[in-house]
Figure 1 (tube, rainbow, N blue to C red):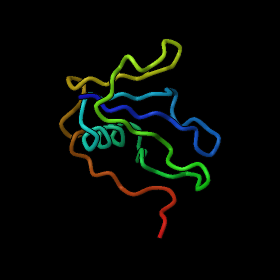
Figure 2 (cartoon, one colour):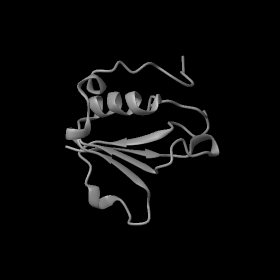
Figure 3 (cartoon, rainbow, N blue to C red):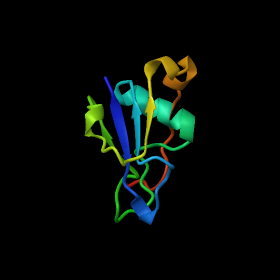
Length: 96
């Protein structure tokens, strides 16, 4: 199973050098791996008018990515055990 995280450019800026980060894991584990590698909760909201910083798709098909789009592909064999189990803190704007 692949989970894809696509930078939405919330707040008018791209957060990483890749438009897509695609991780061979379910969504919960992929979120942990993403935070471990980049220090960003992918569900973070930096701009309340734009929404989440990343769109997240589970059960993703790698063929969806266009040839000209920068993507980082993280295979399960490249994921460390501690990355899979990282607790992801709440970041950004939180609605109450």
